[in-house]
Amino acid sequence: MTDFFAHPNAIVESARVGKATRVWAFAHILPGAVIGEDCNICDHVFIENDVAIGDRVTIKSGVQLWDGVRLDDDVFVGPNATFTNDPSPRSKRYPVEFTKIIVQKGASIGANATILPGVTIGRNAMVGAGAVVTRDVPPNAIVTGNPARIVNYVTEKFQSKTLVSSSPALREQTIIAGVNLIELPEITDLRGSLTFAEFPGLLPFTPRRLFLVYDVPGKDVRGEHAHKELHQFLICIKGECSVVVDNGSVRAEARLDRPTLGLHLPPMIWATQYKFTPDATLLALASDIYKAEDYIRNYDEYLESISTR
Image (cartoon, rainbow, N blue to C red; front, top):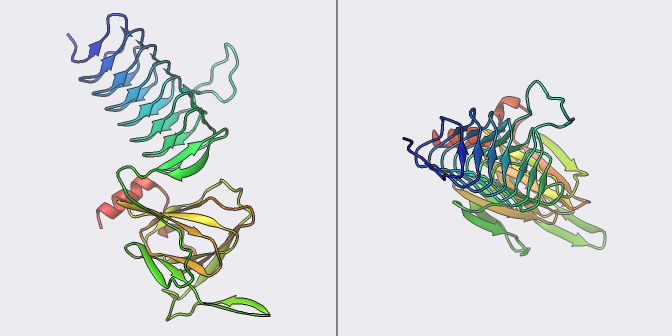
């Protein structure tokens, strides 16, 4: 007797299949596989030995999960998605250990997507149909294409706003508590234009460091971290880029499209910069010198940190 359902035409060799999981016709699960509770494994799915699947995972028809694949809770895998586990495959030549693919909690993979060895797909991320994922996907990112690139960020389970300021009269606009989009003064005459910020005044802190980000390939991503104590003020002094800010429950996106528009990022805000134009130059003013220990680079760690504050 088992506490999961297996279709009469399914082959389930594993003894570690969770309660209320459903395994449909012509699926084949090898003995070493571990499958959680309340999963749905559709027709013609093959699951190899060194595979671990969490709870409430859906795997649609025509998917093969090879050794090294790890699917966390609430993952969705669309039909005919392909997972690879050997970066240099040769017939009858086997690596000592297959390279792992990790799909974190709540992520979704679209139909016919291909995931290369060693890739981690972050929490709640979405991989578009037919995408070829060649490197890690950040939490909450939406990726499409070959090779897959970030095109947006998910808003599901989040209050979300898109903020694009076109008003030169804007003085200060709050996106998320503590995060402000600030329009700087502009002085223009026959000699050109000038903008400035002073502290105290429009600049919300006294800078102790500056850095520039430039020559970013247009669809690549920067940032993807939070700071424990550091404040930052971002200005795209040339070209344009977008900044996604996230406090764990509200997410917003701001377009920095002129040198008179600045974005203040206080501590404990997860921030990502992307959608750089080819000529974009992003100026960042920081409230302190570089300190590696001030960074939070893992999104799960970030969520845990803000929940304890």
